[in-house]
Amino acid sequence: MHEPIIKGNMITIPSSLEYLTNIDDFIEGILRGYEVDESIIADIAISVSELVNNSVSHGNKLDSSKTVSVSISQKNSDVEIVITDQGQGFDPQTISNPLDEVNLLKDTGRGIFIVNALMDTVDVKTTESGTTTTITKSIV
Image 1 (cartoon, rainbow, N blue to C red):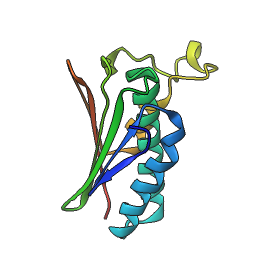
Image 2 (image 1 turned 180 degrees about the vertical axis):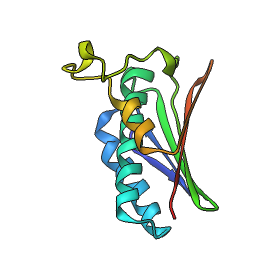
Image 3 (image 1 turned 45 degrees about the vertical axis):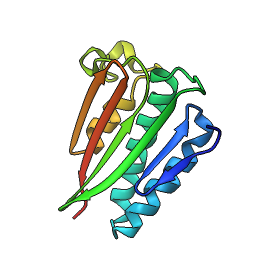
């Protein structure tokens, strides 16, 4: 696969950061179709971008033979987004707190912290075939 594949409310990209704008455009377009407020769209777009970046870079380790999929659905007054990669996963409990003094000047390590701050729920599940992160946000 060399280009994003869109099927309904799901987009699948090769593990390359060059496709992040495709993900942003896809998610923002669907959210605008749901008539979501622009500030909520921004929160969701930032969160999805962080998670996809992590999936491509850390999960799939920029292996272009692997993919990242993002699906989005509206469930009552919430939007649910599921990001799936083919990496070996991680334990979110082991991530250092970016607010600790020793971490304040680091260039990385804030993505999950940001996502937790912006989303209503964040759930990470790791299996032998990859990692699935599900985030939800109220859109009313």
